[in-house]
Amino acid sequence: MGCDRNMSDGDVYKIVELVGTSKIGWEDAVKTVVDRATKSLRDLRIAEVKELDVRLENGKIAEYRAKVRLSFKYEGED
Image (cartoon, rainbow, N blue to C red; front, side):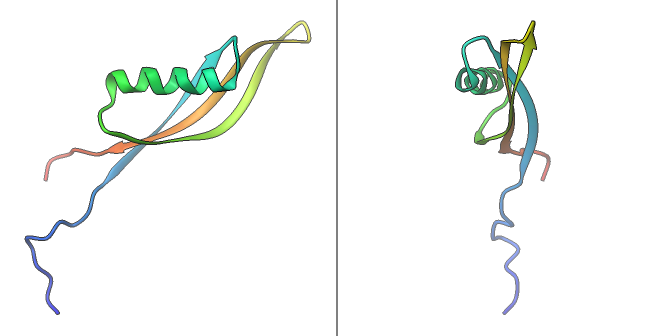
């Protein structure tokens, strides 16, 4: 069967990784990433939490950090 050139070839997505921080907790750190990303990236599709850690000061948790991988639809030239 031949290939119809008028059919969609599928979508393409770009992936970026961002690190969010919070003094409250990891969930809030992830929310910080998503909230900030939606201000500059359009058509976000997936937010995947890749890594959680904390920054310590004097043996106590000073900051929660979340590394988040975001994907959004790539709108390059056809």
